[in-house]
Image 1 (tube, rainbow, N blue to C red):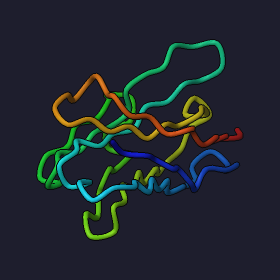
Image 2: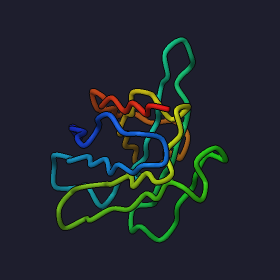
Image 3: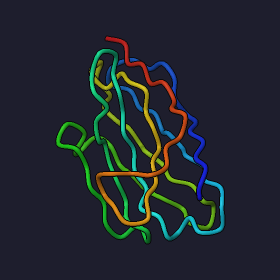
Amino acid sequence: QVQLVESGGGLVQAGGSLRLSCAASGRTFSRYIMGWFRQAPGKEREFVAAISESGGRTSYADSVKGRFTISRDNAKNTVYLQMNSLKPEDTAVYYCVADRYNWRSYDYWGQGTQVTVSS
């Protein structure tokens, strides 16, 4: 089992950048596919990005491709989401997720961190 704690959210102007971090508990972090989802007010939760166990493979939603970068540091049990060129439509609660096998369905979720992009 793994517990996830996100940090790094906040308020930023359009065009700005933020880096989210997600610290995971447990000794088997490197065995998990890690990812990020987000949920905007009144909208369904949506996939943002994912990274393989070793970090060698990544996947992104079309809406963030070229602007967001997911990475991980297995020595620190941490996954990151670097968000550049932020837009007001990126405003959402961002959730860190983990799963042993699936890229789109995740067993473990963090509590979420709010990102607000002002225009």
